[in-house]
Image (cartoon, rainbow, N blue to C red; front, side, top):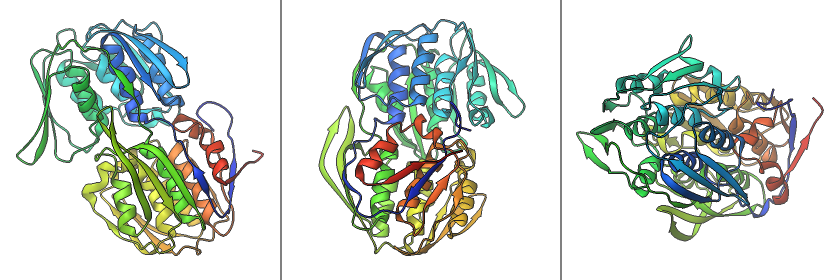
Length: 450
């Protein structure tokens, strides 16, 4: 079932010649952080290009519940009147974060060092995801958390009344964990230090600096080390949200596997901690061109053109690249099915604890459509069938996961026979215009009777 309603079964039929301009929504990671940091600043932050998917809207409502004034001015323009660091009020009701692991984990961090309590819940998918990876480091500040068995939602977080700074080394490559710790450190005295063995997306550090926080990044003893001074007065900002590279991956990859395609995605963010997919696609032989390279709001941006690429080869993706493309492995596995040879994806254990177990979801769905997939706890291996060799004709379970749903819809565009999913509803969490945008390019997506 969709996270916000009845299931929406959908079928993607084979097509040729996806063409046109794909104006994908704003970056989800930056949209979440814009609302949260705007709420922690003093004064009015203005945001344009905000992703208006369900995940981000849930974060906006949460910031209102903590006392910030969040206003939708239409057309992706929003404003946030913040309450300052340490200024959150205690919410009157349970905070429902829907499907968003990013939203709930970052919000927990933002309120963890204020003397208030809040109870968090979400949809069936989010309530099954582990929160201990965030609540454990937050406990070092003095925060307490009480949830279901296995550290799962619903969960009540009791903020630290007398927080202390922490020096924490992340046990896994997770921008959510890093960001939760840094947001908590804003309202702790002294210096909070975060160490990560493998660099993850750095939007939080960039935005903290933009809002006026005293934050430094360095390399020390093989770790990327972020140092944050507590109790800053964050200054409101004007933020232009670039288009989401993770959302752009779907029209881009659909073009690569669909005969006769030529698709331009303007203004996508190409932060190096997020661009691993595009590096990987180029190594496979994809016809990708970056045009009009520029910088907007401290983030590198470009227009990306993707054309049908029948000569792609399978490769071994370096495991150290996983953090920069963790959300893109589902759609990469689809592209790998249309390449020649084997594509090996190692170091991807984090896919097991996303909105679904994405390794299992993609393996089962690809096999149902005639593709050979091998897997273990940390690896997925796809045996490519070439540009016109994927049979299709199967049905995949979306598992309440927007990226799984969109990946199989792209598979159907290049396969020999149509591909179906049981529920397209979760797509609205991150890419609410996916269906009309892809249809405008030439895709044939048909809602079917449940």
